[in-house]
Image (tube, rainbow, N blue to C red; front, side, top):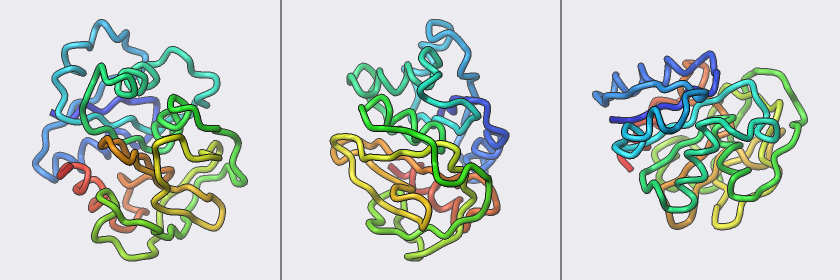
Length: 191
């Protein structure tokens, strides 16, 4: 079972639908749920996705998104992790990187350039269009991670941990506006 932690994104149900289309069972859990109430599901998860959301990681100190990122960092939970937009920023923040306001706070389509396709971006063209929001963005790479992609407005559109199966994307692979987004989620399923 893939667990999707919903941090308030309007697209979370699309993540679940994409996994269903890939014949993977997924369950959505609200990020405001107390960890103790969902501990067993989290610990039994095959993979975890941290969704996008309207909050800023600097203001969100007690959400399930942060708790899970911290437990994966400490090794208490050891499963593949994908952070999308806010979830990506939370991974970076928990690993000690700077997350701050982006150059462009609007939702829109941006061209992503792959610098290192690695596992998560495998099989995608070097450049593709993606649905992005840069209200906040990762400003520096967390220690132990490598950058995988950039755009004209953001230097780190995607990253991965160099040793653990932890990935993050600033954009939204779950929406139809993102070219090859389903391939990104399929690649994560195969991790």
